Image (tube, rainbow, N blue to C red):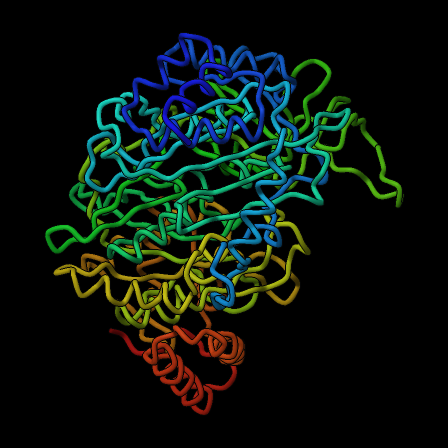
Length: 626
């Protein structure tokens, strides 16, 4: 496209103010791309978001006028509905575009040429009569050598509103650095909406990730996990860049845990959605990130930054007893929050499962709702969806760590991996070393599926590093990246697993939600060698006396030997079955390093030897102290 045509096209879709805003960025590639998108999607006009208070205010108001969001009785809180057919991440139609004949083990891929041709057709005229927004964002602290950058183009004010909360608007950086800046691109269109405002053509819902051009396409969907580019869509592009450049892009929180003498130890944690990740981050002493982490080897240390400044968390079950801090933030009259897929009562009150008040008549993810409403199969329709969400600023949290804005990040001394596991893993356990932890606790992580993903909830599935849905490389290659990463470190983080969802034979949870603070405190002590541990076939577990002391100190709670024996007994048969399941899956991934099979074989051997000595269950009081 000749340059003069490019500028003519932009003028056709932009008033003089927004034309000047865009052309202040000295990047011909960007201007040409925007012009091409405009000619294809045919928006009514283009709005450039510079991050000014006026822009933020306009976008909020436009989301309300366009009925993408609804007002509540709180001036700065709104509610968004995706509808029952578009209420979670779409695994089936989220695909990595690859050359013809190429596939990536365990990753959903699609022929690149066919995918791009399909996207071009789906985007023809898709924004007619609508405003097209362009946003410019930092994916990390300003001035950080570890930060990435992104450009979002969308016809959804809800998407831009969400990104304005979740990320640092960095329009000025694009103006200053121009065509020297590398950035990701995200193109989204809501598609045709029905009378309720929901994306109508979900059969043509597509989320395609093009690694070659560093761009994500998303169409015929509104749910944030499918549309907010710099959220999980960018994670796939970030993983690919990290693979090439030797850094880690992770689905992890970053928190500080205080230990003796007031020291602060920074740890990261990877959990699938709905498995306690946000609540763990909120309960920690200081919070740097509640969801994402970029980790670089720097001066022999693992240094982590948070790409985000906001939280897009699951709201289902958030209550004033177990989650007092986030509950306070969500209902504080002064905080800005976008609720999604909950109940908005007739008197303007946001309601979700976890609020002590009874729900009232109102509007929810399925349309009008009233107490006792049933579906076509005579089943009760819940007032708030299990995958209901909140989007808000992390700065509202009392435990926010000021180092969230540190360009050099924080030093990671431990990594935690946890999933929804009712019958196998103990509540907290330390790996023998980096390789053992990455193989048995990260790469082999299993979790029961939740409502955050379309499909049947409760099914246990392999979710390596709690990031399988967001990988653009195979799990075996992602494991290899982690093993190689340690070779560039002088100080290698310890690896731990946690499990908040262990149940007894009657289906009752063996731990309370608040117990997770004890597991964090024990991990902090182990990082510094302040407490001993017991050696199990699967790793190091806590001594009873250490846990009893921590339960008393931090929860003012008696922790009995009976509790400990039930929670920390090693379920040998379940552990062996898990190894066999996981190894079988990894044999389909030809990128898997040989050491994976060696470590799993050694762990299986230890379990078999322990079974011969102790039986199917190992009493933790019989294990050796280390």
